[in-house]
Figure: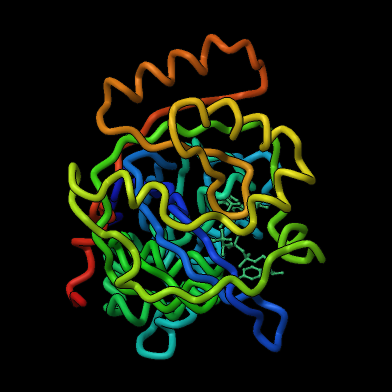
Length: 303
Ligand SMILES: C[C@](O)(CO)[C@H](O)COP(=O)(O)OP(=O)(O)OC[C@H]1O[C@@H](n2ccc(N)nc2=O)[C@H](O)[C@@H]1O
Ligand SMILES: Nc1ncnc2c1ncn2[C@@H]1O[C@H](COP(=O)(O)OP(=O)(O)OP(=O)(O)O)[C@@H](O)[C@H]1O
């Protein structure tokens, strides 16, 4: 019988800071960042099929079905499983409520891929461990292993070396400036800072709320922000605007900009102000920090 798993969240992430500390021989950049999970994201719905077909049953404008990271993740999982079992009949219909913008720096595509790997590993009973799924996920994108890791993390390498980190239970207001930033364009800029001084994980003020929360908000910077804001003045405008409420920053390679708040009420006030700012292209929302990925329990093997 077909099995279902509905309303699976593919949460957004924020990069609370992002330092570029070097470059690999293959051109990829070495980063240091803290990834923060949010309680807002895409929603995915899975139903298994016994005929070996993997289908995305929702249209996603701009992303053909075969190149969608959801379909690529499902196909990759089945290929890996085929080395251990007869996987030829493993199939699924996957529907998605796409809420995260593409090229937003919120990791939407990567999170969709991670949710797909975790949900189908469970439904298909393919039995991969968290570590194995993270290794598979890395083939799809640099941020995928983080979402499977399932906890807020200090990340190094290209984002695949992960260590758990405590972060404040802040609320965030996020502005989508209405543009999509191509990640490679930011990384290939000659003006990009590539030699930030490496930090140690213990340098990050990972403290519970009300103690070092303010410090952790102001810790480090996003090295990609200067380049992105120069190429896309809309980002600069959001940072200046949201900056009246605190230390507003860009996430990932942009375009989204965020600011942290102590509680939901303060976030609501800022959100109200953004919505009455009269910027037609902006879309703003609030979200709460979460500690764990909501699908983390589907994986048996813990860190
Ligand atoms: C900047 C971050 O958002 C931080 O979370 C991510 O590392 C970006 O991850 P992503 O969007 O999944 O990016 P990928 O699809 O892996 O890479 C897109 C392109 O960006 C450049 N790239 C990406 C990540 C990285 N550490 N160094 C790079 O130089 C490469 O040219 C790569 O071809
Ligand atoms: N399911 C998917 N959702 C979003 N984008 C997808 C998906 N599948 C493939 N893509 C492609 O991946 C590109 C990057 O989308 P994504 O939402 O991951 O960007 P992002 O938020 O900038 O990510 P990051 O923070 O990792 O840089 C899109 O422009 C799109 O072409």
